[in-house]
Length: 210
Ligand code: TYD
Picture 1: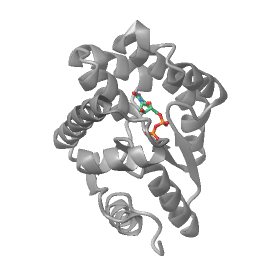
Picture 2 (picture 1 turned 45 degrees about the vertical axis):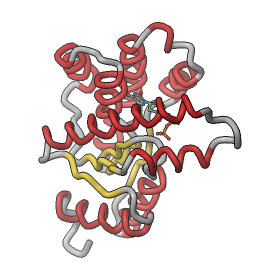
Picture 3 (picture 1 turned 180 degrees about the horizontal axis):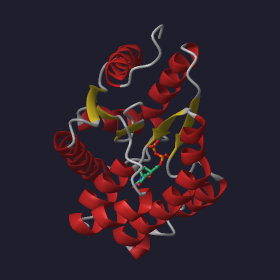
Picture 4 (picture 1 turned 180 degrees about the vertical axis):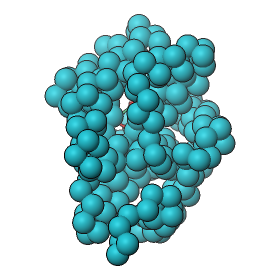
């Protein structure tokens, strides 16, 4: 299962709550994130988030995210699934599709090929798309920054960025309704968690008592 959405959507909080609820039902859960999740992938994460890869352009960034993903899948995700555990991953393929693909303007067919060789069939059973108006996501993200750090120019760029990102995620959900569930991430975290839990129980049946 994967969680996707823009910054400030509340993915990591939701991931934790879902993992706790599943654990209460006796389901073993591996909670992880991308980029990262394995030592080598975490090292690649450092490199990407340091900004060192950005000058190489979105396609090279996509390659780096994919390199991290391959190790993460090999070292953590496949072994966990083989044990019968559930995996909740904070960001996965749809982040590459939205950030590098749509925002980075990479050819869709090319990115699909890269995704195919990267995940080798490991498509999530369920993907929650945490959707919220860009103004709210931006305000939440701004609250995390130091005062005075954000200029007006940056704000307007960020708004356009968030709008495109939101549309990119909604388009993915529309393309793959069997895999993706859109959640209203503007609501309070408890209500968001209840919605996600309802959808999860409907889509991924657990044990009889669960
Ligand atoms: P992170 O601090 O984990 O962000 P968040 O809390 O929003 O999840 O940083 C991950 C950043 O990397 C985030 O801006 C999204 C981006 N990203 C991509 O551009 N492509 C990808 O394939 C992935 C997994 C993440």
